[in-house]
Image (cartoon, chains in turn blue, cyan):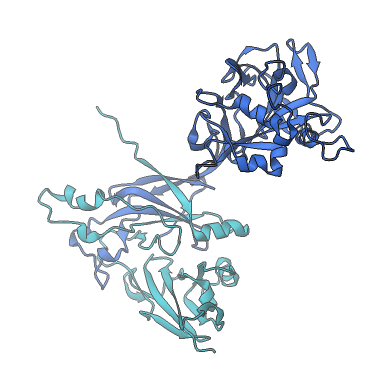
Length: 337
Length: 219
């Protein structure tokens, strides 16, 4: 017999949460950020900027890490589609994220201040949308360190998931507040600078508080509100441009990997003979006579079959595993799909 | 006192082409129920029963060899299966299909009735579990069925076909019927199509691979 049927306890399904850095090449933090002049100049640049880990104009390995977009509840601070109507790119962005994240067109993004005693509803919200391939299934709460720059001043933000005893849910899943701090450790929770929606990989920043005079997303500089060059998106990008600083933007992804663990149990009397042509002569006799009473075989591969004898999956060992009548083998095969 | 080796080897498996096809089909055929072991890559001529250092070293040249990664083509892996046979067996089962190679004209049919040699004390026998036959490229045959094993799984295999690409097809039977395709499309500018058929004894694990050539005759 060459096939052996599994017992019930031989196949185990295990789901494990796997976390990893979000950014390309498993970088713990984004050490540099670039925009694409092509994308910026395209019509999509009116809505968002794609942010790359390398300069896409000169590097073939540059890949999108996240996007930034500027949204405005009333459509201000952006070029209107038509002078006769108030809708603009910024109102489209605001409405898009409101529908996606909050699921209610009558609800606006609100942020708490003074330890939650006061809630504000800013007109302007900056959105950071992490590329799907980068955050995989969801963002890992408590892993965020986001630094915003204003000249030499730095504001470091993290989420409060570690301190939160009861998760808050909105239409897009869990939501946590962004406070001053890093890597899940909140230093000051008086001002809610933004929110993170880990299940959809999006960060919303209270743009109005960050855009105070000399603020972290400064739209007051030269060329600000120059709608034709999309400076709102550019201002957001510049504020989180990591430049040469380390740990500028650290974030981890999380995904659930479901694995089948299959236990291959070979009893001492099983699988000791081989049909390998180098092991037998043309008439089927064992090549080495010493193997008649003490047969030996070498396991190099495990095949997993269905009832039809279809080979569904195969696993190779790194080195041959000796099998004879004095040995039993236990091989654990991990099958991910 | 030293630590004991707990002896568990962990390996990662990959899906074969057939496995991905079964997974995509979603009809329950992707259900792992049994396993087999093979010693592909092992060259037993390297086994040295005259090693001057003794029997512990007979297999030295084999045991230290590195192995290649698995291939996803189910017809190219698990070729030489390990078998469970009584101790003292001196002759291993061999599969005799009656053909060293098969050449069929378009539309022609052939029945293969394999036998197993040196199995269960018999010089020649038909295995009660039947034989598994795998055609590497199902497109070259218009009919590929197994007869003689009347289980539900064997019957289902006869009717199961995946269209469109060169996937394998597996059937079970004591006799395997095949008919060469009459369609010219696959030939292109060629006059022949070539593939292989692999026949495996379901009880013994004995295996033979036969090259198959389909000759274009239709114009």
